[in-house]
Amino acid sequence: MQPQTRPSANYDWLLTWTDWSAREDRRLEAVFDLATFLQRSQAAQGSWSLDFLSWKCERLVSDGCWYEARLEHRHDRTDVRVVLDR
Image 1 (cartoon, rainbow, N blue to C red):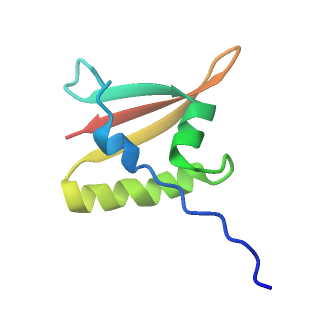
Image 2 (tube, rainbow, N blue to C red):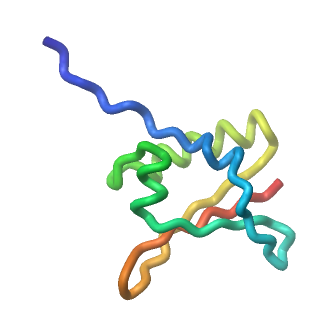
């Protein structure tokens, strides 16, 4: 019996996300609760950032868009801030 493998994380839902906020530097951003971000992406907490790095490099090559994601720790939760540079 072969071990079950976890499906790969998928961040393509960000490609159709419509609730971006404009920033002063002409980039776009969206903020998600970490749990929501992981659920939408089907990602594991321990490996999501490496998976996201691979995904954003693919997007840069295919679309010419650059995505950044960083954790922001609040006193009551952790958020993921995603920035899109077109």
